[in-house]
Image 1 (cartoon, rainbow, N blue to C red):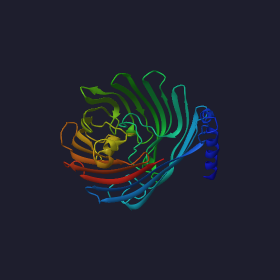
Image 2 (tube, rainbow, N blue to C red; image 1 turned 180 degrees about the horizontal axis):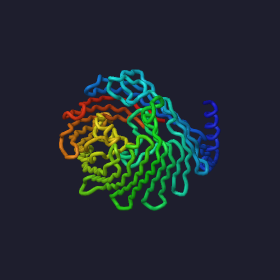
Image 3 (cartoon, helix red, strand yellow; image 1 turned 60 degrees about the vertical axis):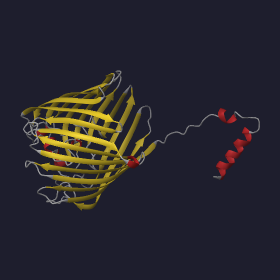
Image 4 (cartoon, helix red, strand yellow; image 1 turned 30 degrees about the vertical axis):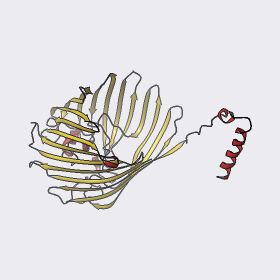
Length: 400
């Protein structure tokens, strides 16, 4: 502090001694960024789950993602990141053989304890492209087909080569070759619950050259060593834009080798219409999967309700069709709180309520760029084909 005061006094004396422009003419000394920068992401969550036929579960978990990233050097940079999760309250089923805890008769909460390498990649940025080689996070579009399952404490990552190119105006082209999928069940899980050897070619494109309209397309060619029932070839396209004050979205996909026996061809479509009313937003949507349509790499928690009543069937295609008609409403509350409520009606291949209905409610409070709190409630009421499920969670997120 004394040294800073002396410098200030010294420069002030020059400024009052006939050299008023001296300070502005001195060259600025920009601080060089550090060669290595730490990354920190911490989440503490309490979650309650009650699935019919199982005992209720309670989980209090704390997850730390700690990493180091390098400064860019001639376009090259690198990142290495570990992921560590502990259970302070472990009265739950972690969801997979070998995962800890694994209380057999309890409802599943897919946040087992783990210590593992989450990401480690070398990256090159240049020529309007970004190339990554190594263990990495990959999310395409809304994560309905390829995502990181970011809701769970241990995210899904990929051992992959990926490239993103923007050399054509308004066009983004993505490609990834994946030879291993690192799943959410952690370092103690056994077999394919931990990771899946694969031979995946993922192509994805987005075009924004039309005013008010974004177009997307994808080809996902998936070949897994085990389970081979996940193999599929999926081709799809999407469009999003605004018409007459409504935010519209539509997506269609066709899948070959669908279903657990790879014996089906199936279609997928998803459409939404949203309208803003001041600070509020209302959206109505319909998502439909033909019988057997599967999404083994998806962030499935983001779809078909937060009770996670359909996640296993959606991943493996072990369903007779899923139709989800939903209505959501988002509005701001006091003190920066945002409140979203969603009602779902579920049917099978026929659009109906034969599978049940669900109500979801989410409160989000963002304190600043580092701290965010989330409270989430979901109740799925079954019509008898699936277990009735209730889930509640509250969490705090910190990132740096």
